[in-house]
Amino acid sequence: MAPVRIDDYRKLARERLPAGIADYIDGGAGDEITVRANRRDLAAIRLLPLALRDVSTPDLSVGLLGRSFPVPLGFGPTAFHRMVHDEGEVATARAARAAGVPMAVSAMSSIALEEIAERSGHGDLWLQTYIFRDRALTERLVRRAEEAGYRCVLVTLGCPVPGKRDRNITNRFVLPPGVTAANFGRSAVVVHNNPVHSVAGAALDPSVTWRDLEWLRGRTGLPVLLKGVLNPLDVAPALDLGVAGIVVSNHGGRQLDTTMSTIAILPEIAAAVAGRVPVLVDSGFRRGTDVLKAIMLGADAVLLGRPVLWALAAGGEQGVADAADLLVEELRVALQTCGLAGLADARRNAAAVIRR
Image 1 (cartoon, rainbow, N blue to C red):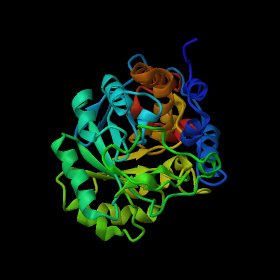
Image 2 (cartoon, helix red, strand yellow):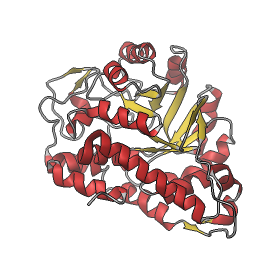
Image 3 (spheres, rainbow, N blue to C red):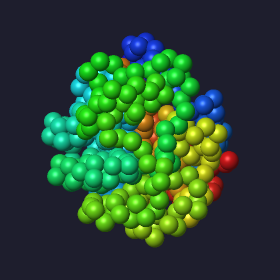
């Protein structure tokens, strides 16, 4: 039977993948309290539909970074896609192109960022990167992305050091043979907690500050977005530096356990931003109703993480495209059954339709 919900792709992926890889995808930091909170808090929000509204042609379109997209979704950065499918990030990017959504390519992609762009033909790729300890390497990655036609740089915050992932340590996780971070060399170091330690030159830097972000902004003409903003106090310095957007993210609960869920803190971040730049959100989104709730609470779009890898493992490029279509259709139905004519209407009527 074809999947009818995003969780069906997860079940298929777990049937097809080695247990260690499936746990690498599903797992989070520590006791995985934040992983569960992301889902729990989304599920706890209630909707109060409006009746007798014309919802015959719901408008799902959204503008981001000067571009127009048919739906408020994107593929967030996830590493090592070739762990789950031979075509890796190329298949994922082709599916994103078919869905008409942007895709953030992880610096830890298992196919070189230039090859992903060339073979997928996708014109809305974003480079996700950290500000690595090796600043010259960081700058080279950004230059490569510029030359390959990437649209923006998505800088991940909140990772001064790798989080502690108990499942990986228990499973003694290592990357499968032949899978590595293709934008880097490979080191002989093996640390089961996180394969980033096995990537030559990709050492994280716990000394990074806003000054380093200002340095990176000065090294590229591409728009810079920040992923990993959870505290409203970080909005002002981000906007002062002229960032082009903010992604509210707890990294799927994979970095620091017991943080707030993203949907719980989203309204405060959105209020602090006050419409000056786009606000995106990730972590825990599995249903069209989840996306609708995020839009009504202040997000411009939602980025998908684990669902993309589950669908890639379950069905390759077509699996990812089908999963995206499934979520879009759920969002369309959610809007219509709530009596909302589109995303703008959802924002206008949020106070009437949503209950927390």
